Image (cartoon, rainbow over all chains, first blue to last red; front, side, top):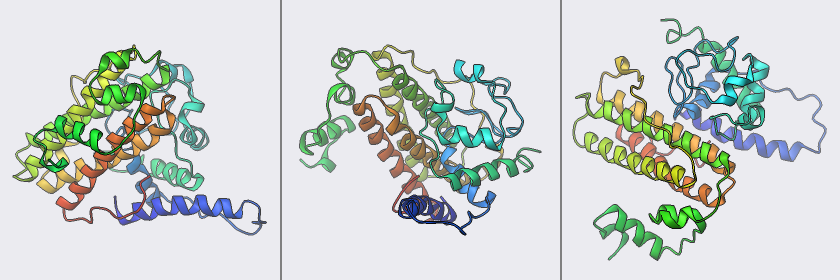
Length: 139
Length: 189
């Protein structure tokens, strides 16, 4: 993991702690930092055991993800649940799925507890969106 | 005889389980110690547990294939080659255990793909191969971390955490091998 990645991991914990501390406080005036594809790349490292941008692995490739219907990458062996889900992937659906894959698509083979931190998810989604235009996705 | 003097992994594991006071129960103990009959008798499995194990098995099989690509690339020199083969051996043990567990819980173990698609064109040096392996190991740590809380059977969570620990060590050693700080953070995510 890059030092950026470790900062993201630390920040993830720090954010959760901060959320707890601030839960009862008036937070008016605070604004979330804009999503960052750079930070999102570090979050994407969590996905590397099963996913890659340009190759189907244990999970399907992510190039072309936005606007794609779930379960539709050719030659990828999806779970029956994902084949039935008919989700069009966009920022909103990805945010819901990444929060808790098994809650949104019970029976999915993505047996992962999700990315609990909303800022991490936003960064990850920003990275996935930006990666669609990367040389890896547009060779 | 200390844990470090044990001549085989199986002996070391038994020694560890015997001396550490580590208390596992139910199917996980049975599976980790190779007593599959006991595991089979432990009761019906939650289908989700079987799916979690099978997803992990798929990733382990892919890791085995990735290390094979690395080992046959002619890019790895000793001792990095030995390291890669050792870690591949661990993944084979994980895969074997996961497959047997899936079977004993009444599921059909995921099979290795006939072909894997790795970015081999981008692997041009030993450091490239080790960096790629480190990335996979990092992902594996996160994948197990994301699976541990999902098991209905907490003993399986514990067994998965045991594998997570091994893969975290792989990740750290690979980082060290490419000249990066082995452990940069107190937490993994």
